[in-house]
Length: 48
Length: 138
Image (tube, rainbow over all chains, first blue to last red; front, side):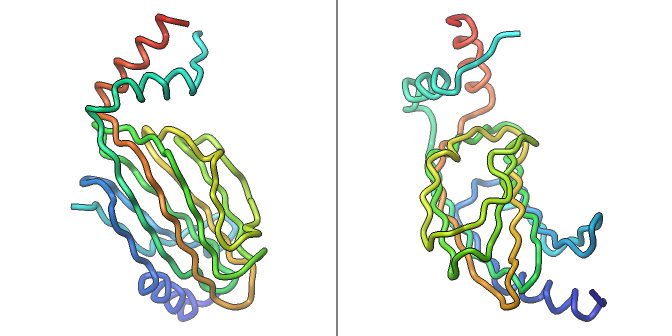
């Protein structure tokens, strides 16, 4: 997977992600597998 | 080592229930074609989550594979989602440190999926008390 393709996919994931109702202080980490042993961070937040 | 029965703990929680609160969580996401996503939820350090209900909705059948690990232990592994709306009773579980989902879209086109969860948030100190009481009774 080349860099451009990875960025395109990450953007799609960020745009499509909708979360509601998580308790205050919850940490959410979304990452995407880019090779057998490597994940790339897509999105992270602590709900407020 | 004392083995704790999940049902005993759950019954104790039901007795204590008045002090706890319920949350309804909804997560919708797009999984691009041929992509594997990892989604990790970490409760605040002073909370324990007890998942009471879990509904999963997928826009296509037999293309999305899902694994779920609670505190590092597998609850389900590489389950192919074969129904548009799945009500997963067996997912009743506690999360103390992390709930980790690995979701794979095995198809060549993008797909959408959503989950709807209902769970109890239990203050950590109350949860520890319940565990102590259940251990005494065992």
